[in-house]
Length: 592
Image 1 (cartoon, rainbow, N blue to C red):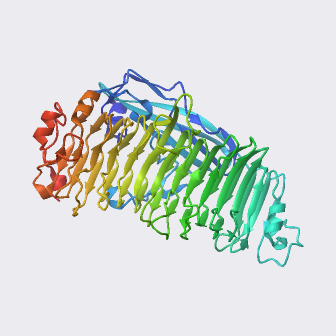
Image 2 (image 1 turned 90 degrees about the horizontal axis):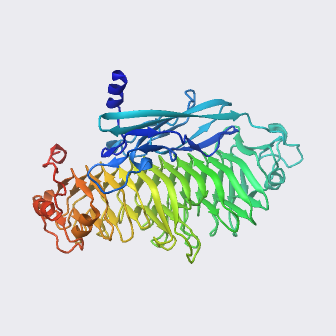
Image 3 (image 1 turned 180 degrees about the vertical axis):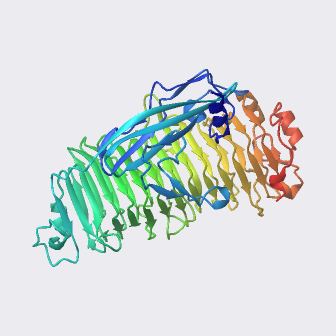
């Protein structure tokens, strides 16, 4: 027992260092988007049902939250799997290495792809700090993966074929046209597209389930390109039916149209679309992916696995690029690159414009901006307008190990009208991310009930607009910001909003163990309404502040208005009733 305890103590701990529990309750088990499927079988899992007894946050008025405060790590039981992703973050902040998705995922949400039939056991390890050390529990869940049932037939398509006279049953007798491809959409069917092929028009998959669209041969991914009109290159439609278990792998739905994008997925007339996955797809054009909600109940369990999504034109009629909306429940995006491409200042590059109510995972995503404005990760929940009834909660979000850069904001958590009395996000974790070289700020939590941001490095943001890296605005309640590093480069900025600005009536209730370095000569590190912070009983401690261009003087604006400036650490401690009582003196991190 002692050996296990010491071994557990030596492992990295990604939970809340200030959270203490008596014991971990695993009776709820692993929540799961599905427990069986056909290859390739995509599964999303969650620790949302894990609880803890006696959980508290020491010296803080914030409520304990197992989803945000405990340490979670996953093993998908597939040691022979080849699912790996390059960590997109710069090497200096932990990126550049290869992540094995079988065993390399931490945090309360995770996803995986099984490509070989079998029965796999997912293992979730939960760790928590107690008054005597670290305690650990494990919980298991089996996933059954079967071979794909191609009872509806297998057909081949090659744009270089002579015509459609072949039966399409072999590569040698492949059919030629997109018309033929559309006519062969059916239940339990595999449609093979020849690499190097290119078609112009729209591939429509409507009211058909259990379909695989795969490449064959050698060369570039097969292209389906829409060049005009209001169609998309790839359309999935459910019209009065349930469409389920669709995988598009290794193709390129490309859009040169000025209206819709490469991929459009819609449910109509009380239909349902579920388990639709884009597997290492390349998409170029106006808008990469559009998930419209229309009149149906929405999408359930959908995802993007790898691939590249690039805006290659400057259309402004439909300015979202990347990924719009998506599954209402269970939605993951793992390992792709989203690039805004070219465009004018009026184009907003909403790389991901989400509409997930429960269970959203954004993991190892490489965001590349290039626009003059926009949002890399725009978490909006589109509730009915105008609002009436009980406020909704959108829950169980994880954003992990993403590199977000060259746009306006890294994360904008709001609703269509940013009305916090309509929808609030809670059980929301941002961890191990890099947010840098942004025109404005890194985090804009418009409609957040609880959010934890940890182990994230934020730098060189808000210079042009004079905005803070993190803006806490009216109506938001943030759980914890801790173990983050926030830097801003020297500039002729005239704003005194600082790196972190409390601009609302509800303060961050835990702000600990952060390093804040502001190289501006004017702006403050922290802009804080002291009365609000004190009233909230917030834990603000062990933070390091450094203003090297002003001799560590005037680091704080303690009225929160951004105008008083000039407060020293001693004045901040006194006004804040002991806040940062254990603040460390200038350390080695700022001598390099």
